[in-house]
Picture 1 (cartoon, rainbow, N blue to C red):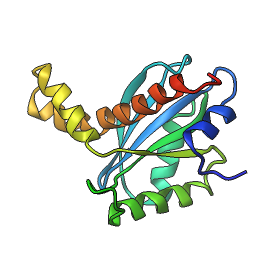
Picture 2: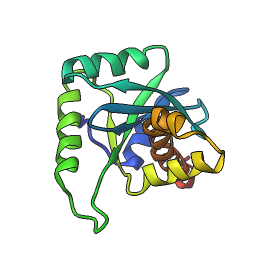
Picture 3: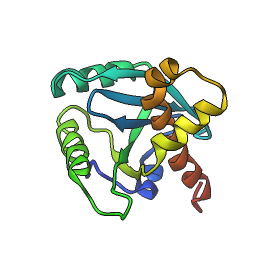
Picture 4: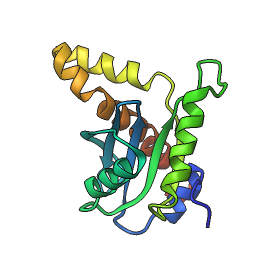
Length: 158
C-alpha cells in the first residue's frame, strides 16, 4: 500500500479512534500538531529541533508514541503561483525517507500562507514576538492539520 495518499484515502485508512498528526517542516524545526479523537480540532505540540534526518525521525515518532496516530498531514510549501520550488522537493524527500521509519501514510496539504495565518492569529491575541517565534511552526502545523480536518468533515463517507 503506498505511503503517500490523498485526503480521501487517508480518511478510509484511519482506524477507529486513531488521530492525525500535522507537520510543518522547517529548516530548523518541525512544527507538530495532533488532532483530537473525533478529528475535529488540531492541537499544537512543542516543536522538534532539527538535527539530521535519523534523529529528526526518531524524535518525531517518539513525540507521537503515546498518541494513536493513524497518519500524517504534512504541509507542502508550494510557491504562490502553485509551482513547486526547492522546499517542495525537500518536503517530498523527507516523506520518502520517513517511509523507511514508519508504515503510516502521509498526505500532502497545500500550506501556502499557513505561517502567515498562524502568525496573524497569535498577534491578534497580543502574544509577544518571542513567544510567537517559539510557537509559530507548531501553530502553522495546527493550521495545516485543521484545514485537512475541515476537509474530512465534508467527505461523503464521514
